Amino acid sequence: MNRYTWRTGTLEGVMIVVALIFMVPVYVLINLSVRRQSDLSSPLAPTAQPTLDNFSNAWAQSGLGQAMANSAIITVVSVGLLVVLGSLSAYGLARATARWSAPAFYLFMIGLLVPFQLGLVPLYRNFAALGLLGTMVPLVIIYVGLRLPFTLFLYTTFLRQIPAEYEEAASLDGAGTFGRFRRVVFPLLRPITGTVIILNGLFVWNDFLTPLLYLSGSPNRTVPIAVYSFVNENTTVWPLVFAALLISVIPVLLAFFVFQKTLIQGFASGIKG
Amino acid sequence: MTSPATAPATDAPRTAAPRADRGSSFRRNAQRTGSRYLWLFILPAAAFYIFVVLIPSFQGVFFSFTNWNGLSADWKFVGLDNFTRLFEDAVSVKAIGNTFLYAILSTVFENVLGLLVALALHSRIKSRNVLRVLFFMPVVLLSVVIAYLWQYLFQVNNGAITQLLHAIGLTDANPNWLGDPNLVVFSISIIVIWQFTGYTMVIYLAGLQGIPPEQLEAAAIDGAGPFTRFWYVVRPLLAPAITVNIMLSLIRGFMIFDQIWVTTGGGPADTSHSLSTLVYRTAFQFGELGRGTAIAVVLALIVGILGFIQYRGLLRGGAR
Image (tube, rainbow over all chains, first blue to last red; front, top):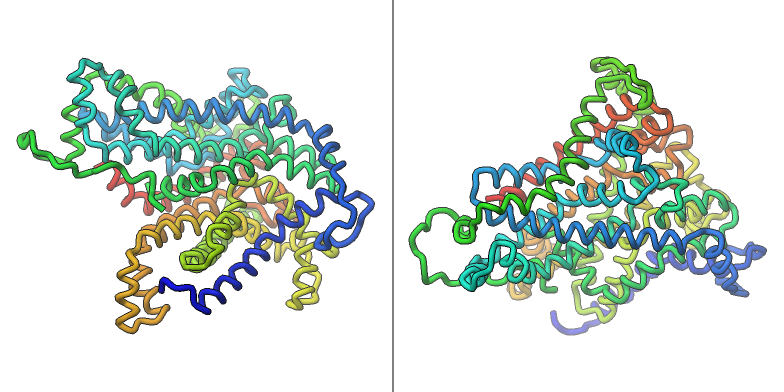
C-alpha cells in the first residue's frame, strides 16, 4: 500500500474535483471583488475586465484599517493575558497539594460547560453600570475570563505530564517558587503555549457576538463589526462588498498560509488535549 | 504529524525516592515542589473567571425568574412564567426545534464528510498537503465574511449555487434558499458544514496518523477489504477523535449565532432562529431581559448536560 497505483491516481483525481467544488465560494469571492459594478454577468463566469478599484473604494469607505488595528490590540492583549494567567494558574493548580486544589480545578472546568449566553445579559448590565460600554476594556476582560477554562485545561493537562525533577534542580540552585516557574516551567510549556495562542487568537479575532453587543457604532469596533455595518450600508453593491470581505480576511489568510503547518497541528493537538 | 501536546518523557525512570510512593506521579510531583504560596498564582485568573463567568451566570439564572426589562428599578418575581411562555410561544418553540436541527445536521455532515476527506487524504496521493490546506481554510475565515459570501451565493434569481446545480443538471428548480421557511434552516446548516468540515478533518487526520500502518497491512494480508479494515481496525482506534469531534460539532451547533444573524436575522417570519439569536433579540432588541435570560438558561441546560456527559471522561483523566 506504499505504491502509487492507478487506484491512488483515481482517488487523487476525485479529490481534486471535490476540492475544486469546495472552493467555488472562494472563487466567487475573488471573482466578484475584481468586477466592475456595471458588469452583470454570472458570478461563476470569469470576470472579463478585472479592476482593483473596488479594493481602494472599500478600504477608503469601510474603516477596516482602524478596525484591524482595534482587533489587533484586543487580540494581542487578551491572548497575552491568557498565556500569562493561564500558565501561572495551571502551575498553581497542577503543583499544589492543598485540599482546595482539586475543587478549584473543577470550578474552573465548569466554565467549559456554561454557555456564554447565560451570563451575556447580566454581564452587559454590569459593564454598563461601570460605564465601560463602547471601550475595548470589557472585551479584553470577557475574552480572558471566557477562555480561561479552556486555556487552563490545556496547560494543566500538559503540565501534569512534566516531571518535577526539572524544578527541583532549580530550587536546589536557590530559585524561589516564581523563579522556578519563570525560568524552568514556562519555557517547558512552549509547545502548548503555541496551541493556546493559535486557538484563542483565532477565537478573539473572529468573535462577532461580543463586539456586536459592546462596540456597535463605536470607533473602537473590531473587524467583524466593521464588515457587518459596511455590508449593511451597501447591500446591493456586491463587488464593493466582496472587496471589503476579502480585505477583512487577508491578515488571517496570510498568517494561515505562512504558518499553516503549525496552525493545523495546533488545532489538532489542542483538541486532543 | 507529531502532536505538540504530547509531553516530554512522562515516565522518566525514577531511581531515587521510592518512599512516599502512594498516589500518582502527579501527586508525587506536586509534593516535591509544593509551596504554600501557590494559591497566589491562581488568584488573578480566578478574579477574571469569577467576574466574567460565575457571577453573571448566577445573575442570569436569577433574572430568568423575574420580569425585569433591564432598565426600570421595579421588577418582581414571576416564578416559572418566562419558562412556560417559552414553551407556549410559537417562535420560541420553533427556535428550540431549529437549534436541535442545526446541531444534528451540522454534526452529522461535518463528521461524515470530514472523516471521508481525512481518509482520502491519509493516502499516497501527491496533492494531499495542498488539499488539506484548502479544506481547512474556511475554518480560519471570519464567520461574518463566510455568512455574507453564502448569502450572495444563495440569492434567489440566478444565485451561484442555483446556477451551479442547473449546470450539473441536478435540478431546474429555483429554490429560495434563505427566503423559504421550509428551506432556510437547511441552507444555513450548509454554510456551517462548509465552514467546519475542515476542522473535523484535521482532527480525524491526526487520529489516523496515530494508527500504525503495520496493523492495516496485517489486516490486508489476512484478506480484509477496505471496508472491513475501516470498521474493525481504523474505527476503534479512531474512537477518541470521533468522540471529540462529535462533542465539538454538537456544542458549536447548539450555540450557532453568527451565520443566522448575518444571513437572515432569524427570518423569514422568525422561522430560522436558534436559541442564541432568540436570546439576543428578546433581551437586547425587545428589552425583555427576564425572558431573554430564561431562553439562555434553557440553552445552558442543553449544552451543560451534553457537555457533562462528554467531558466527564476527559476531566477524570485530567484531574486525577
